[in-house]
Length: 350
Image: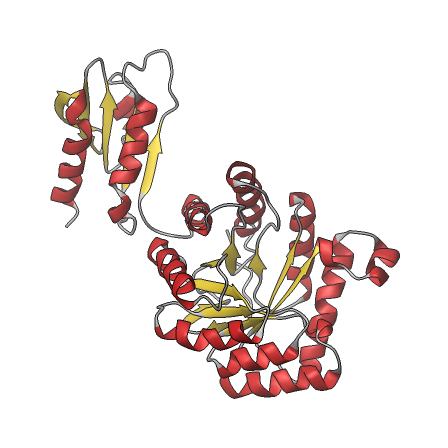
């Protein structure tokens, strides 16, 4: 796939755009002014693979809390601002790394200029984000809910910043509809040079949201569109990171552990579903290793079908095979399969 190269901006120490890796974002669901809980959640997300975190800033206490939060985390932090330009300025004073802010929604041109004057001092990037559900009455009356309305709205916000000679910008144009999301990002990508933040907004709970996000974000990335992603799930934000990582791995855009497993069938004589889950949990610490691990259901086809895997197991009746690159290493009792696999991986991946 050929990447559509966009302007490079820096959110803290994470470069977005150009040929830089696609970065993974999430958002805290804590009250930002609760510093301890917010820091705990950010550090959990960071350990899971989150590279940029966003926090809500609905009041001055939240904006001021960012300064202390920054001291206790390892990843860049973005302040999510709506309507009140003073909160944006306070967040910048608290050393925030970027803002999520629509300049057309914070009042007069003087308000916008005040924010930009502070942002320029530290080269603080601003993400403009337009959702299908937040279109103005004027846009709805003129176009209805469509990609043209969403993109035109986003570019109007961009124009406000460009008028002030500020181009540290990234943009998102999300919808809860996957087709509308795709159409909006394709149109926007053809019209602007700025990096794009991908996502399907309000995508739903873990099951439905994972599917919608994977199709929406994955399709765009496969077309070379997008520079940073956030999977939105009505669930623990940690799950957003797992899904995002898997999307990137599936497209070859991120290296790391890949676990493949076959569907169960009538030949399966072990509890393959439970075994695959145990393997997934047991290999959590190998997440950053460039390994492919196979969990196969039968001794007949398993090693052959998964010959490209670095290591694997194939179940039989009360026993199973341990194999490496399709070559059988040994036959072991079913209850020893997991331990033997882990031992083999450790032995060969140091």
